[in-house]
Length: 241
Image (cartoon, rainbow, N blue to C red; front, side):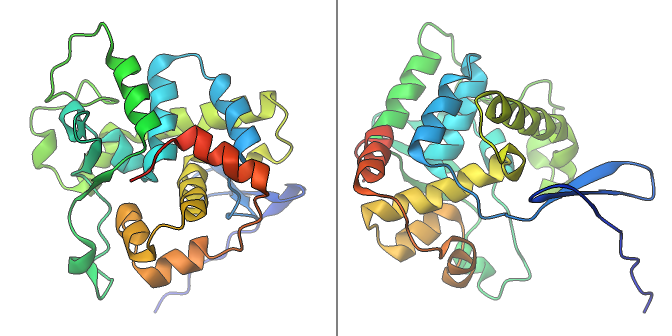
């Protein structure tokens, strides 16, 4: 078996290292991948996002715990205002997992009341085609028939754009370790914040598309929110079913 070459990394600051691939492209490696938002940090961040679509995208990540590719593939019809639910039909598939089938090929669940309010505000005065994607456009006619790997090239630029926007805004509002954040850290935030509601663990695992072992490995940190922060979290989310 061919031995994989280890790429050398250079530390450029506390918590951040950079390396260079064979093709000359630089990439960064964060020491702390468990970073999540505290409520005051989130308020500062989301208030700094003025573009309505970008704001709603980040709110979708916070209120659903979706992976970025899952959120990008949402259609308007996937959000049911009357029932207060969301349905992810394009989800990450892990065929290597023994319980792959139990995790499912789609996920639908209740979302917090404040998210539905944000959605209503987002679509107000718009002519909506329920079959349209919320965050994607200019897609090929056969996009829906493609597998996840083939779809990725059509939204890769969106992932890069939202990731850069997130870091840029966090740096601007004074978050010292802004480099420890990516859109995936908003998913981690959802996992930690939802635990303040004492939701059933199996329900929370389902909502995030994880098995229990994976959830505990990535979201098993002790909750260190104080009472004021817990109240702020519940104010941001609103009622959670």
